[in-house]
Image (cartoon, rainbow, N blue to C red; front, side, top):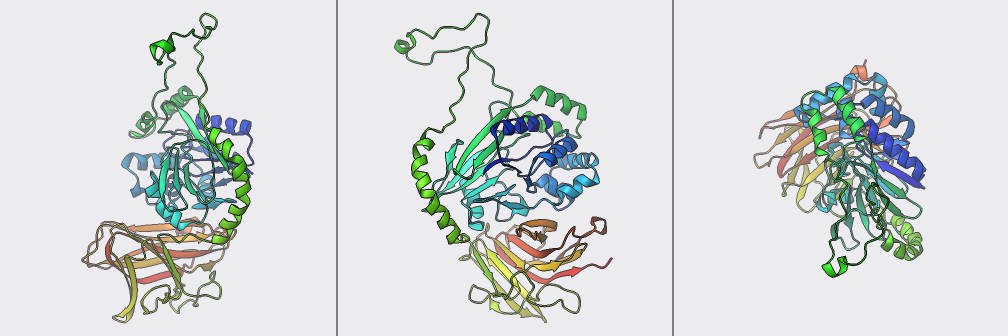
Length: 496
C-alpha cells in the first residue's frame, strides 16, 4: 500500500491544491494528514473543506487543538492568539466538531503518526534532532514514525546498537533493525527550502521505501489572497519566512580551466531559457540494496511483531488487572470514578499502584511513593534530573454517549523542586484502536513552592458530551527536577 503523508497546510489553498495534483499523478492508496490544516493562512474554511473531501485520516495539530479548546491558547504568542480568533470566526460549528474528533496519534501497518513528538503528543513538542526523538522511540514500538510541526523535512535514525544520527533529507529504504523519525515538512508554509516548494512524503509500505516530494505552487496568487484577507496583527509577516525563489542564472563553468576549455554542448534556439538539470532523486544506493532488503523484510517484519513495545529509557508500571480496559474499583460514594491510591510505599514494577499506571522517562533517577498523611494518600514523585518526565495515568473508565466529566488534581511543589511543568489532561480512548484524543487539559503555570494548588476543569455543557461511547482516563504529567506531591485525584460524571 502506498501512503501520501503531509502536514502543516496552514490554510494555504494554492499549496494544498498543487500537492493534491502531485499526489493524484503519483498514485497513492491513502492520504494522511498530520495536523495544522488551519492557522497562519488566509483560507481556513476552503482548505479544511478540501481536506475533508480528499484526506482519508487525520491527526490533531496544535492549531486545531487550540481552536477547539483542548490546548490552552496561552501557549501561543499574541499574534497567533489573535489569528486563532480570526480563524474561528471563519469556520462554522461543523468545522469545529469535525476537527475536535482528530486523534493525537494514528497507527499504520508498520508506522505511527503524530503532529509532534510521541511521548506526550498532547504537549506538541518539536523534534529537531535525533536527541529530541529519543522520548518518541522510547514511547513507541514501530520502526517508522512520521511527524510534522517544524515545517522542515528531516530524517532521524536510531541504529540497532542504540546510536543515533541526523541524516540528509533524501529518499531511502528502511533497513532491518533501524528505527526512523521522518518529518514530512510543510505543505502550506515551508521554512527550509531555497525556493517556495511545498513538501510531502510518499511511503510504499510494501517495498519499505520512502520518497520526499517537493511541489511548486502559485506563490503570487497566494500572496494576493493573503493581502485580501488582512490578517490581524503581524500574522502576515510569518509568511516572509518563506524565502524568495532562486533566480534562473547563466551557465557558469566551475571546473578547472583545462577541463572548462572542452567544447560546450550545442546551445538551444536563440532567446530560449537556459536548460536546468533536474535534481538527482537519490535512489542509486537504494536500488543497489533493494534485492538484499527484500530478502530480509519478511524476517524483519516477524521480528518487529514479536518484540513488543520498546522499553529503552522508560518504565511503565501497572497493577495486574483482570481487564485493563475497566476500572479496578466501582465509583465511590461521592462519585469519584478513579481508584483512590493506596499507601503502598515505594512504587516499583514489583510493587505497583492498584488502579493506576506510572510511566517514568528515567526510572533510575526518578522515584515515586504513596504514603498515608493526615488521613489521605499522598503521592510523592522525586526526579533527580531536571529534564526527567513522568506520568500518572488512571486506568480507562467506560463512558457513554453524551457523558460529561469534571476532573481534579491537587498539586504541591516541594522546596527542592526545579522549574518545570505540571499538566492534567482528560483523554478519550477511541473504541477502534485505543488512540487518544484530548478532551480538556490544564497546566499549572508559575506555581508557588510549598503550597497546594488544585487543577480542576470540566467538559462544558455546550460541547454536548462525548459524541460516542468510549473510554476516558485522567493523566497527570510532570517535568523538571525535585519533588512533586499529588493528592485528591478525581474524575466525576456531571449531571445535566
